[in-house]
Length: 286
Image (tube, rainbow, N blue to C red; front, side):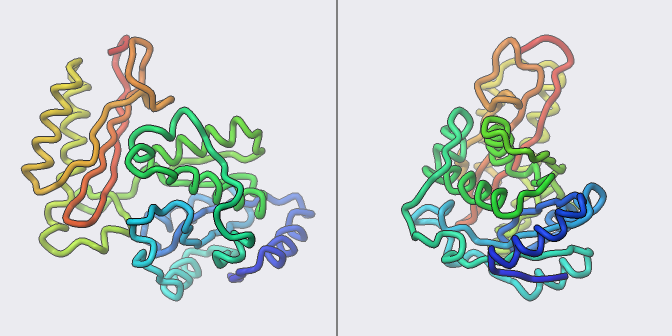
């Protein structure tokens, strides 16, 4: 596995590889890798000849009071995991490499699916995500890119951006990898103390309960949300949001919605956790 931090050197390497007409896959990450990230790398190997994993803690997607400075940076351990997984190239640029003009600078904004949910709670977050992903796409020019479904709004944003900007890239979303108690794997889970960790799976349990009730034919979404918020608060969470949305657009559910997504974000102590589950309706809309 080669580790490169220079855009120029990475382009030179990929340019020579691309001349052989072989397929390149990109797995963008912020590091502190867990089994969910490695699943993306493993899946990428089945779909491409070369897998490039990037590790970059992107300052542009963190708000002024968020955890950029304390976000876990574990490069040596990440390199070992990627090497064991058979990853081919690791790209580890600095902030100066990715943003040579400093900030503020050119931004990529994806309207329509970024103003709600995490976008409403974290202003500017998705502009930071879409901007850095656009940069990575332009630097690496992958044939495919793989993302986890855990951040459903992020994946929806990237799909919309790729479609509307005509990136010739196939976007693949993989199912959320979970701990044995259902908690979605996340680098931020490491912030939880032992007691918080025991309670953290209640977010997933809440979403499962709402999903099961929707699948049984319940149409009163407001009541389900109220019950879910009560359950989260009882479990020690401070809910940030809990909503049922159209799974394709992330817009409000209407009579044409055939697939829904339940999205939740809540604080357990100082740690903000997110999760989601999709629901395919048996018939008609809601």
